[in-house]
Structure formats: structure tokens, C-alpha cells
Amino acid sequence: MTATAIDGNALARKLREGFAGRVAALAAAGHRPGLAVVLVGEDPASQVYVRNKVNACEAAGMLSERITLPADVAPAELLAKVRALNADERIHGILVQLPLPPHIDETAILDAIAPDKDVDGFHPENVGALVQGRARFIPCTPLGVIRMLEEAGVNPAGQEAVIVGRSNIVGKPMALLLIERNATVTVCHSRTRDLALHTRRADILVVAAGRPRMITGDMIKPGAVVIDVGINRGPDGKLCGDVDFESCRAVAALITPVPGGVGPMTITMLLENTIAAAERRAGRVS
Image 1 (cartoon, one colour):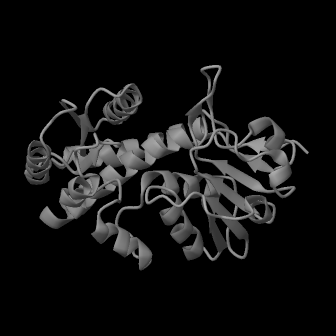
Image 2 (cartoon, one colour; image 1 turned 135 degrees about the vertical axis):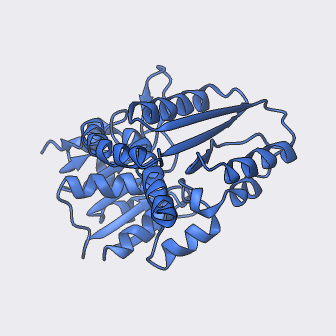
């Protein structure tokens, strides 16, 4: 068996083409969707992520505002910038690029973002709504995974889903989304005693642990759907995921590559959340 690769780039292009009409309609009514991205410091990877997000916004006809602050910025200054963006009528979505420098309390910054502009879906109010099954904003990477499963015709209902990683950004919201879709969900993490015992029974395996090629072909069920959320740089300097692609492709039915899998979908879902925020605002003021 050789797995079919799920092309995240192709799906992202398809979805972004569909956004054009929504953005144009909003802009014509005076509600051009606007996203502000705040970058603290000069981390090279963060700079690339921010540039990609800003470029994607501009390509979609959206307003994008990039705010760059020095790594030693005072927490109070960063909070003031977030509050100013909360009050800016041109901005519908606010994203603070993580990670932040150690002297800044990430939780305090994320909590300061207005819930109706929290397009990352990290504010406690939005997390609570997700838990209750009435989400306003769903974190972008898990939402992207759900869209990929839908595009591939994978129905999670009744299936065994295993998630490797329990972060607030991916693992926990991913579990909630799959539970809502009637999967039976197991979440594994660094304290899981026998990881392979769980991964081998997964019909749907989502890996977001941040460890290069940790999942190998002998750890997955034949015919499984394998979603690799990880992005790492190997000793050869090339990007790789948390899944050993070649050995797993020989066993799985569907698999996402790295790069070109989940990554493009994360940015696409950020655009979708920002457009949705603008549509909600337009509905309230029209």
C-alpha cells in the first residue's frame, strides 16, 4: 500500500479563491476585513510566519497591518498596543505571534485581545465556547485539519482518533473538534507509557508533538489517515514533520506531507476567521 498524500497547498488555493467574493462584498459595504499581526523580536522563523500571513491577507484583498516591536519591549507597551488594536475599527482580527520573549506573560497578552477579534481562538471566552460546541473562533491549525479531512471524504464518526500532543494550540482543540464529530478520541503526551499501543489502533492519527519523525511506519494501523502537524528542521537543514513520511506512507491510506500539508491550511483558516469576524461586525452595524 502507498498512501495518497493530502495536498494542503491545493486545498488552500481552492478555499482562498472562494474567499474573494466574501471579501469583495464586505469591502463594497465599507467593511474591508483587516488583520493586525504583532511580532515581538527578530526570531527568524517567526518573521517568516508573519510575512506569509501578511502576504496572504494582501493577496486576498484584505487589509493587513504588521506591528514589529523590539525583543526587550516592556510588557505594558505590548499590552497598550493590543488595547489600541482592540479599539481600531479597521481591524477585525488580532494575532500576536508566538512565542513571546521570556519576560512577557503570554497568557496575559492573549487574554487582553478582544474576544471578537481573537482570530487565533485562544481567548478563554472562545475556548469555553468551543468546549460547549458553539465555537465563535476555532484555532486555525485544528480547523485546517478538519477541512482537510472533509475534503478527503473522511468522516470521523465512530472512528478511533488518536492525537499525539496536548497543547492548547493544537492537541486540546483538535480533540474537542473530533469529539464533536463523534469520534472516539485518545490524547497521548510525554507521560503516555506505551505510545505505539495507542497509535497502532488509530483510524485517524494526528501528530503535533514537535519531535522530528517520532512516528514510524510500524507505529500506525494499516489504512490509517495520518495528519502530520509538526514542522521541524532536520540535521540536513530540510523541513520534516513529526511523522517519518516514507515509512508511514507505505502503511497509511492517507497522509499529509511536510511541507505542503497542514501548514498552508493554518494560514488559510486565519483568513477565514478574519473574514468571519468582519462579517459579524458588518451584521451588527448594518
